[in-house]
Length: 219
Image (cartoon, rainbow, N blue to C red):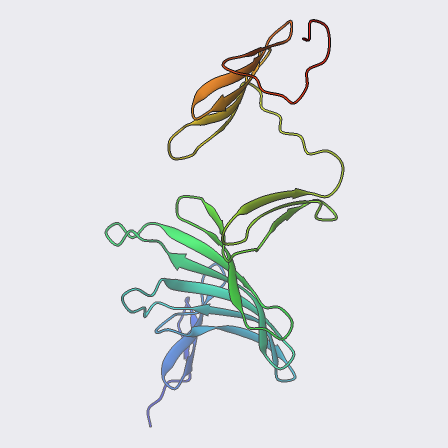
């Protein structure tokens, strides 16, 4: 029927075809797999089970950002982990990209867990998914959908700025606490300083109320 199976080019490539479509060719530096449509790729398998699977896609529809993936499959071809390379959001220059990481828990499906954006931001996707640090995951950072948490399970949690230290509102800049290098620690109420440590003690601005007072000079 005129189909091409193999093409030998003098002083050039060897090309292999499937159903008259070129699927493999040698080059001067190795070999390459021509991509003609979505879903083209390279699969490694053993006794019917697929292990690594590399898939490329050049036939993308509008809004489809997928370019290339490397997936690990196990136990009757279940996808257990995958890395995906995608285009970015710049549809004019088309020169940005992102990387997404997927995993599947036991009995679950493959879900996107982490993304590196074109700007270099690292997004952990999903509420209550944790950034865990340490050999025993002793330091944990996460957001539960309503609040954010820093959990330290071993030893002391140190916050160690080189210069001054502020705790403040992200949107308004209102300062709650200020620590000055080689200086005071200040506490604020609604943006106004009310308490300040000094070299000799502390200064309170306004009224100090307590149930009892004790010490030198107490009355």
